[in-house]
Image 1 (tube, rainbow, N blue to C red):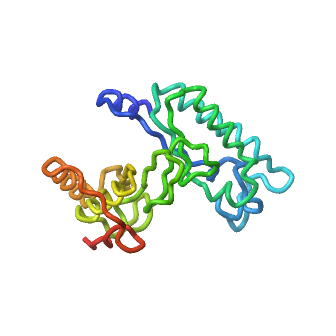
Image 2: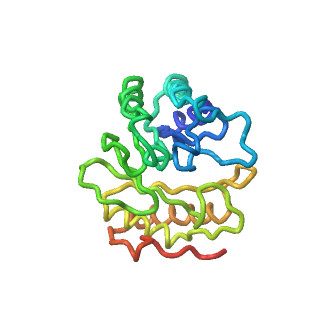
Length: 234
């Protein structure tokens, strides 16, 4: 984190952080299968002995751990432009009030008032911006929106033998984002050694070349349900 923060400061870039909220496969008191629809942590067979179950499970212990982690991120690495929370299906599958998300938002803004908070397409409606996946959602709040997409057809991390978006498909996504007055966040899943896949690098460089030469595309409505052309196999 320190290296990343230093690199962003050197380049004059805002550092935006992704935080996996509620999906923790190591903490013994992370949201469990019985209460949260099976989406928070794997249901191992036999059961994982380090997990707390039943009456022994205390979600507040996990919330305290999570709060401490986010506090560290906001106090040890300089200015943070935004925190993008992920895992919305976990609080939405049960009593979301147990996660005390508004308290978390308030703490983030207290530590760094300029930090923008997002929770996917919006959990409480009090987020600073909305970040739906892959396609836009109805946004009547007047708040900024960022469409989050990925250069590979399946998954957000490295996926072997995945199909990749080409430059035409990314330009179309940019056009759709402009139509919705939204930012576009494009994800690349690094290879196991941490490098950017060659296909992604080729696509991003070509998109950059087109933007420098012609500027951003005009806004246009989504094509079908996917808002973009189908990725081409490479």
